[in-house]
Length: 292
Length: 123
Ligand code: SF4
Ligand code: SF4
Image (cartoon, rainbow over all chains, first blue to last red; front, side, top):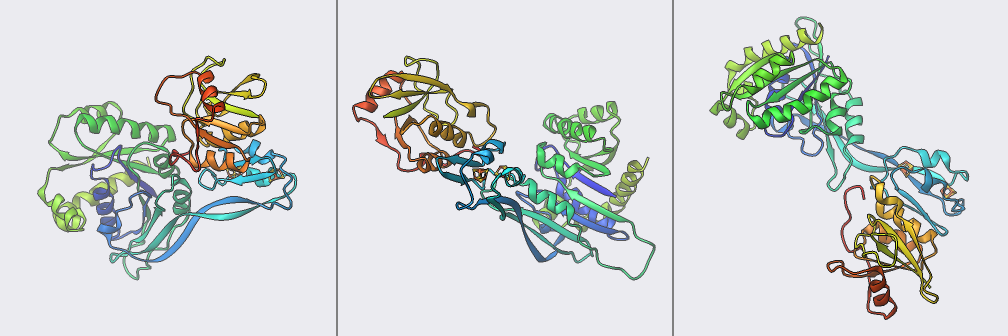
């Protein structure tokens, strides 16, 4: 079961919800947590994993053997990203434009091209004190492309800690999506069984919610909503959800303890234990909604 | 020699376009004879690497020099590899390709030794 926690914009409490959901789930289930916000992954600040495995990831970029290359220009013509250029007798490769598609290597009539790893980021993984298998992708500064890291992150499923006692555990993967509604958000949602939207009951919240709801709808993934800072603004979000058959699974009121928890590097359910049953209930509702 | 000028139009009277990769077209002038040709910039619709694509066109057209208002690092690297000199003309006043050509032939334009801006994401 793969659950994505998403929001149209940053600062809605997405990570607060995702980390609390993960902690509550880990009480009895085997939980993988993937921080998919490769530009600013911050879930580790709340879940405190010991990140002891680091792996460099990147894309395969072409290198041209000048001896074998006859400057025919095929590679430059085939490249949709203008990442390889042939001028005169010289072939140039621009690693930061390359998407690693392999077309040039494949098409070169002289087999003058070999591929090399161009590192764009790192995947860190480890386990949290409460037994959550945690992984995050971190894009190198100055890189424009987070997608290769995201794909690797989704592929890599770290093994959760074995536990000796209790009922058989369900395998749950919780993905903390990047903010916004662009390609990385789509990639995070792809293959998921449920998307949980975290939003605020304001006109801005509603505007951003609509965009991410459209993505989940296009991908055919069932979804539900958590309204954070409930009570501020109006209930246009509520009306929108009713209209679009989006169940509101939890309302979190303005609560001083939430801000304090964030400032102290703790999750909401750690700072305010009365939220534990609510998040347990949220999880069970998600699992029920995802399997109808 | 052949010089290419980035312009926004179809004739020598067309206004100078200070952007290299995203210029509407290029005017290639044979300075000895004054003969000129106009070539649409295929990079106009490119989603990324516009400078690289435009630079390859300039190389294919056989220009030895190019005049534009700004060069990104990838455009500059591609033009340099093709041994094409990159000249700079200020783009902040409206001028025609003919005026730019005049400034070039009278030696009033400076060379851009390196990229004049850091490039754009995906450009
Ligand atoms: S396709 Fe191969 S031989 Fe042709 S220019 Fe590219 S690298 Fe050289
Ligand atoms: S691998 Fe693909 S994107 Fe990269 S240079 Fe070759 S054709 Fe272009």
